[in-house]
Every structure is written in structure tokens, then in C-alpha cells.
Length: 336
Image (cartoon, rainbow, N blue to C red; front, side, top):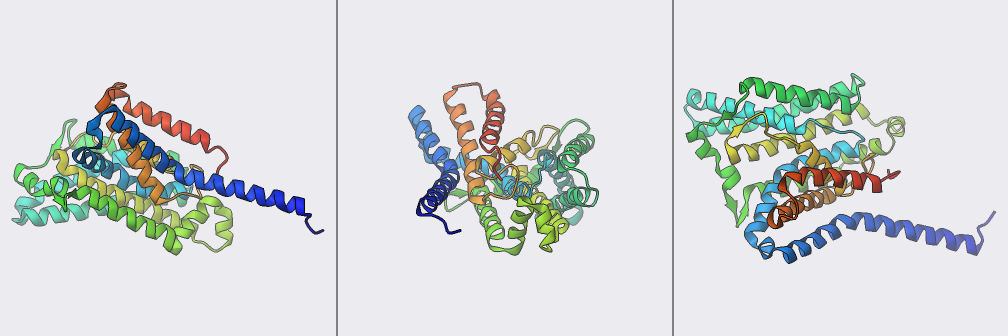
């Protein structure tokens, strides 16, 4: 039976409302960031200064890079609670490796370069282990990564004897520019964050792998019927996150020159918060790297405003992020 003009108009209006709702969800993080910047400038004039802006972006880089990888995992319908502990173990392993190989090779620079490669390899291997346990072992991602969260941090504590693993002074001076140097007035970590985000956006939106990730998160069973290699895509997704953790760790190590049992505490909370605040559906199937980047910056801006204004204690920053996750998850009810 042909649709009447009235029913066609109602259908058209419904589509318009859905379209505007979708646009509002996409622009929500950006609007929130702009409003926060206005409020921050109003509360403290130092907020809008160039040094503070660079400081915020530099501190965002670590979590932002991890959040790019986490975005792929969450879009595919998974989760990883171990990234903070993984970063801590990678940092400790890299420092021990560089300290040992510097004198052995007779070239501190070569030791640092090999240490950087080790970080990426370890991240990929840890991600591979997660992917295999989840796909081949048929264990829920929450359980797998909750278990490795404890394993990774326990091994770091064991290697450090409960203390800290510190980079030797001469190697630390050689490694320091990775965090403290600038290019065209912009700190190196910010440039790396930008490159990782651009590459992540291209992979997600311009490759078959990115389309498969979104398809699996939307409906895994349908993706299997469509001949998508679901297990392989999931494994690659967790490996991608592991590599992002390795990159973030490489930038973080020269900041303090050490790794301890407290390194990376709550990084998983911040990365997940950045992803869902950026508009990625917590149930999977939809999300964007651009939104994730904005979400990571937005959370850093919130922490920066709290530090500059002392509206509440800085010790409650994690509580604020926790509330943000709960509120956004509440607003996303039923969205997929």
C-alpha cells in the first residue's frame, strides 16, 4: 500500500530529528570543550596562556595515544582494563634493558633505540596475548584484562623489589629530549600524539580493517555471516592498543626517568573516559578518533582547571573522571 502524504511527512520529520540528534552527539564533546575553555579563562587568566596550553596538550599526549588504541577496542565491543599496568611493566622493562645494553653495546644511543623497539614489541605481544585469550580462549575481555592488570603490576613490583627502577644518569640525559624537546615550538609528545591520531583516523575510516572493527562492534554474528575474520580482527585490535601503550610509555619514561609500582595508576580509567566522552558508543559499533582526541583534551582541561582554581581538591580528579564516565554511559543507554 502506498504511503499517504501525512505518513511520508511524519517519516521525514522523524529522519530529520534523528539526523539532528546524531549531529548533536558528534558535536557535543567539541561544544563541551569550548565551553570549558571559556569557563577556565574566566576563572583564571593563566589558563589561556601558551605555556599552559602546551602543558595541557603534553600531559594529554600519554593518555590520548592510549585512548586512540582503546577507541578501536571499544568500537569492536571489547574493553581493556590493564593498560596502566601494562605501561608500568613496559616502562620498567625498557629501563632495565637500556641500563644493561648501554655499557654492553658501547653505544648509549643504540641502546635507547633498541629500548624503543622493545617497548613496541612488548606492547604488541601483550596485546596478542589478550586477543588470543579473548578469541581462542573464549574468555570475556573484562575478565582477561582484569587478570593481566594484576599480573603486569605484580611483575613490575617484583623486578623493582617494591621500589623504583631508575634510568642511569647519562642515559637519562640522552633520552630526555624525547619528552622535553620541542619542534616549531610544540613539544615532541604533542607531535607524536597528532601523528598517532591521524594514522588511527585513516585506519578506522579508510581501510577495510576499520570497517570490520565497526561491523564487529555493531553485530558480531552478522559480521561472521559476512565472512569477516572476526577473531583475527579482534586480535589485531588488541595488538594495536598494545602498540599505542608502548608508544605512550616511550614518551613517559624520560619524564621521570623511572618506573615504580605506582606508574600508570588509573590510566585505564582516563583512556576509557576519553573514548566514551568523545562519543564512542560504550556497547561498540560507533565512534571516532576525532571525538576521542577531543575527549582526552577535555578531561585534561578539567584537571587543569581544578588545579588552577582549587574549586575542589586535586585529589578528587579521579572522582571527577569516574562521574564523567557514569554520566556519559547513562546518556548512552541503548545507543549502539
